[in-house]
Image (cartoon, rainbow, N blue to C red):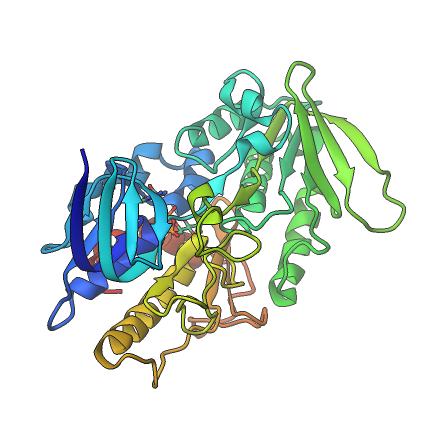
Length: 405
Ligand code: FAD
């Protein structure tokens, strides 16, 4: 069926970013008319998947019906955007609906590229392969199964890709939880816990990296920098690791595993890469302080899909959303952004370092700490763990998605 509809503001994507912006727009004194293009029935709070993978919660805790969060007065178009035509101010959906707009907010998140590495898609789909990942609702509970199955003499690998990823700390959070779990069972010394990352340091902000190095030492984790997973051979339980630089590292090594937690390569959604909105790397090309598109003045973007060089997190979205709403509404009123609100790259990565332990890393575009708390957050704390496990989910469902936080 073909249809044509016009809205003042069209939001593509009803995830963390799209829903937060929709809620804030509808909270305004004279709310604009808003449509949200979002195909999914379900909204996910992804940060909790780390603790689902560690057996703390069931995965159902992360999901709520999408319908609960469509703000009153907003229109939900339950279809997927497939073509962006910014010269005509239109988006076409998979149902062939043409939606036109005065302003467009692009927030479809990023895509997980399971197919990018030979053997990975096959391995992750096989529940007996030992290959797991907290990066999707579908697989995150398998991590806990594999953690419990580890035995003395086993090798547990944790990998991080060279692409940008959401929540840069997530590949190591689950590793620390696994090590803590093994310690609790009294077998940590008998299981080899190994981290493979193309990164040149364990974490980009030195104040937090210092603490993480102590955590790594405490658990006896073998950290391999300049090392990237390039192939999985599930039939032989082997991972192919490629050296990406550093001193004297071998070009390629084959490492066997009993459990391997993979963070898959990630990129902008194909529909964005193929659109006139993308930059050379495929992300929606926006000014990093105002979130306005670099070519199309009536297009804005935030969240994982946009080009801003911050750590891709829900916490970043919390600071981006009011910036975007302020700037877009000013442009709508005056035709320019003479007095912009600016986003300076704030992101937060709650680095879980064990059951009941967390380092709350908050930082900006310059990798400078940007703390929200009046105490030393570079230390592991139970209070920050409790915030992640119990406080932030409540703040998300009842504050952020309601336009109140
Ligand atoms: P998403 O929330 O992923 O939403 C994208 C939405 O767009 C989805 O609803 C999707 O259905 C929709 N969509 C996709 N394609 C289309 C299309 N073509 N048309 C219309 N709609 C479309 N963040 C933190 O702040 N702290 C953490 O501790 C943390 N930990 C994490 C741990 C894990 C394991 C993971 C996976 C993520 C974590 N994050 C964390 C990151 C956080 O979840 C994301 O950064 C955040 O969800 C990004 O919001 P978004 O709206 O850009 O994308």
